[in-house]
Length: 390
Image (cartoon, rainbow, N blue to C red):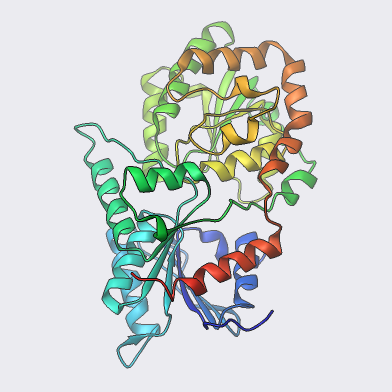
């Protein structure tokens, strides 16, 4: 790869701990980025109890795990790493700081950027401004931090026009600070994987599995629990399989399920690999997201040939546009649509199988960039951030 016009020394802030695994797709992506960067340093937040030994897999790559709990401690730890290992004569070696989400990773990136006077680039796959309820203090804090991050970032990457319009109109971000890089998910592993998890063997009390992959407790998730309670009256073996939820999110889902009287019908799974087999083993994937990383999981589910019910807030509306499956895109909060679509897929296996067969063709619409093109585009974005006004 050609040497960049503006040599970039990148500090990459992430909560994705999969980069710690040598065989992970994220590690492979970091190694590919390194071919076009002078240096890349990755601070991994949320790695409690896994040690802090620095990983140096390539002459240009350093990965710094953190073993602390909680957001504030992550900020303190990131500053400790910056001062103790990334600073030379009081100057931070990296010249661009990248936060891969607008909340915790982005907040750490912006605070480091302000302290060391470095340019900050923020990524958000699909941002939707939240409107917290009166008593939701944590949501107010989160939204305040996100707005702070957007104000102080030199550049913000979104994946679609809707997110760009949201940032411009409701967050008052200058258009020149926003760039659109289409979402890229390496779907080949999901498309080619033919393994299927047998949920009924492990959970014989469940017959129809609705798989979700939440990153926060959304209204869509709350409504799904209420709908499932009603479905159980007609189909007692209806179950929700919750993928990836940990800590406070898992406790909140468990509490809500227990209060609704369906705790036995809600199961939690933590697949570390071969996620395609879980998408394929479930009867349908329900998209509970209204922003953030939901698009990625939706694409993974479709690539795994899963039947899907989604909403128009993310990439779902775009993917299903012009297909026979637009009725499976339910407006946010439309309980009647959601319940009728779930019942339709439960009662008509042929409709479910038809969507499974065509799902991978639907997802091909999102692949606007091949892998090499995506890597080159991101490298250019990081080089360009050195030339823009803060």
